[in-house]
Length: 99
Image (tube, rainbow, N blue to C red):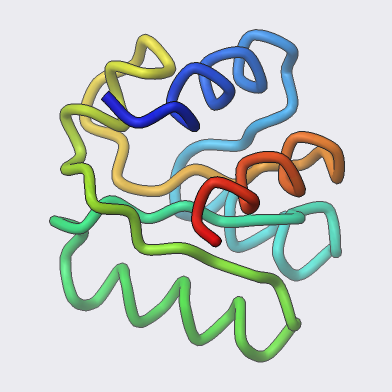
């Protein structure tokens, strides 16, 4: 299991994540999102909508090697394909795992 997943769980429990496409897009637009993680099995439409919004608003995003089940398990929810990190510290540390 990737090391960033533990940190992701911690960020979620600290209330520093947003879930659900609408909430994530809203947080990208408002500048709250510091990093967006997408599971590799995210649907094409959802992936395009979120990555386009990230590019437009200059929010870094990462398509991770894990599938939605692994990503969801890390935060204790089910069927989550995208997670926005709202805290700069968590975002920076998680980003460091991707090089």
